[in-house]
Amino acid sequence: MPKTTCLKVPKKSGEQAISLVRELNLYDSSLKIQQIGDFLCIPLKSEPKTSALKRIESTLSEYTISSQTFSEQPKRHLVPQDFLANKLPPDLLANIPRAIDFVGEIAIVEITPELVEYKTAIGQAILNAHKSTKTVLAKSGAVGGVFRLRDFEVIAGENQTATVYKEYGCVYHVDVAKAYFSPRLSSEHNRVALAANDGETVVDLFAGVGPFVVPIAKMHKNVRVYGVDVNPDAVSLLKRNIAVNRVEKQVVPVLGDARQVVKERLFGEADRVIMNLPETAIDFVDVACQVLKPEGGVVHFYDFVKDSDPLETASVRLAKAVEKNERELSKVLLAKTVREVAPYTWQVVVDAKIQ
Ligand SMILES: C[S@@+](CC[C@H](N)C(=O)[O-])C[C@H]1O[C@@H](n2cnc3c(N)ncnc32)[C@H](O)[C@@H]1O
Image 1 (cartoon, rainbow, N blue to C red):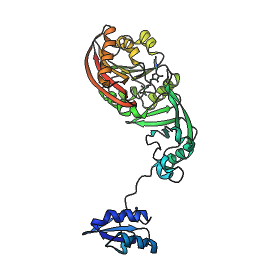
Image 2: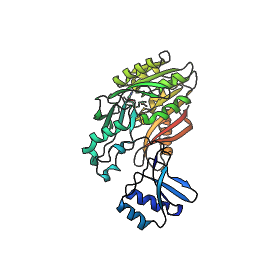
Image 3: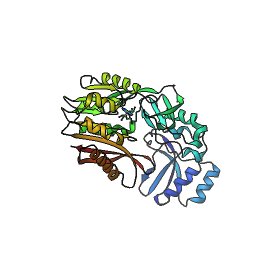
Image 4: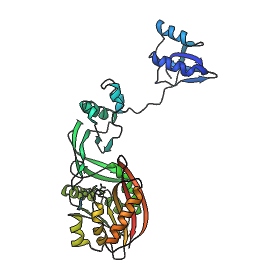
């Protein structure tokens, strides 16, 4: 235990004494303040010089200065802000992105316009704070297009957009610039995988690199799982992920437009359908109705809703679209918000029984 200078004050003037020694830059925050009876012992970095002593004398009515041993504070994990203190104006430090998406060796951040000129320093600070991160990418623009991709800019570290990511015991090769992937959906991937049952045929109409189909196959016996995607890069990563997770016998990767694929080879096959294409899933409810077995099954329907009652809105939207396709939504099994994607705009999931 380190020995250092101690400012001992009555407990009742503890708060005042701590803010004073902080102000005088004397407070040693790496050591723990001790309480002895009605007194607090505050660790100091060094003995106070004459001017500091004068301030202490004039502020505190009762105090003693001695030398004492203190126990150390547990080490705090350093955050990017710790590496930026002298590099950014203090008012901007508060705006440093706190929401960092970690995908394997890659960290993804959003750099707001006022921080653009500091982006390299911010990227470097993220690398310093997170030792297993090798690349920091800044989002440039929104997710868009049929493949649901966005552009990225490398702001620090290695020039790469491909990495390996682990989620709930599954391994994924991803390339965030070439195929959609979001670690923010990890609990949703797991939830849907848990909801599936042994023996089912499952069709993921918009499978991406496989974060629903792979865990379903890993968790359940005798399942037949089809992962459909129109993006060739997503399907080649999906094939790789099927192989590394050893689910080749259960998962069938299919490259193509979901509408066409269902029409040509999956009509009436599924017990369960996954529709994670929130922007336009509503336009594929007819496809979901076609791919389900004649006796029906379960649909996991994702939607973006800007509304005061997003769950009701999404459930009603789904029910109406199902009805138009001569099926019936017999029960909403679950409706919940997955995440807020913009102010008052929600990604919502509705799990429903369709007959
Ligand atoms: C939001 S991503 C979801 C991917 C994956 N389910 C996940 O959770 O990471 C939607 C995916 O649907 C694919 N997609 C878009 N339109 C499609 C279509 N008509 N048929 C098949 N796939 C489509 C995109 O390429 C993209 O990979």
